[in-house]
Length: 91
Length: 369
Image: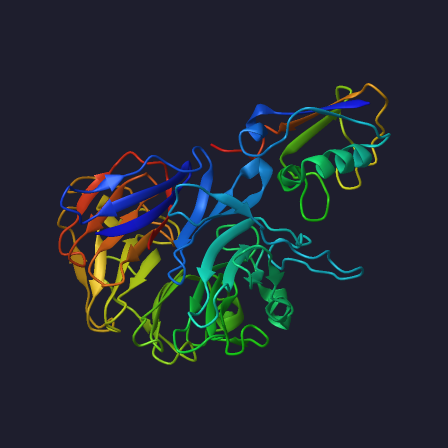
């Protein structure tokens, strides 16, 4: 079960508590998570399902490679962290 | 009393002026979040706010209790770009992403079409809602006009719709302004569109292209409610006015210190009266001689008053963005806010101003409601 955690900066805007999701790709993890917390989806993904330009997603400590297709593999017990990138944010 | 909603880089402020107890500025809603625009729907009293979260995208909110609480509603979403479609920004030669970058303006529809809202976005799509923002549909007929291939960004990389002017004479009649792609008009609720920028003039393209209505850069359109054929335009290259609902625009070549600026407010009852906030030029976007003033015409643009009473007497480098000035429904109370966080109001159409704050966040928008 992957452990999914969202940055505090996002938690203040929308309900996105930590959760454990069973899936072997990031797409599966996000699909499972956003099924439980649908309001958070559009804060992380754009209207075409890609990770927003200024969001950083780490799986097991590595930045993901497939920001459009979310095909990055996720192993059991991996941590998935979602942060705001330091580019493109509020000033 | 008049109430205005002031969208800033760090939240939405509610400002009351004209009451016996003096002006008040609320604590911000959406604390710390960039609020692009906010508007009251006069048909049912609802408030709408457009937020740009930066990292987390564009989100819209609605309040049905005068701003005490807000609920997130749908945001405009572009459809997937069809397979094989090439959509290149002519200026950057980059593919245009079909994705909402900014919900630049939200405009309630005509009183006879309750629930209808319009939303102008970057990268240039107009969206329509028939259910108070619970869902949005891209207005395909405008998105698919062949002229869109010529549109490019003004201030942003991609084109954007900043003005949606609903004609009070009947539902379905709308004029929109976009940077950079001119002005467009529909008479059938968005099913068909005609360019409505003839007479505008651009000096940011070669002379042979200067009159092309498809690539004009109107910064803001403002219509006279009681004489709706009259629309004012603060354009990148000057001030223009139409007396025939955008069929033809006439340039106003003299307007006090400068004809360059972003904002315009139109008197709701007097088609000859409008206000502007001049800056030096495209290249130097600060007040002329470092002196912040408002200009006003009361004779259709033939002459302008330069209004200074209550505005800074010393060096001042405030710039007012395109949504940063508004006049109330009576045409007497004016409010404007600047990129340096200064907010002024006038109870008498600009004869006298009072500073409300010099310490707000950078101001995107001011709207009475």
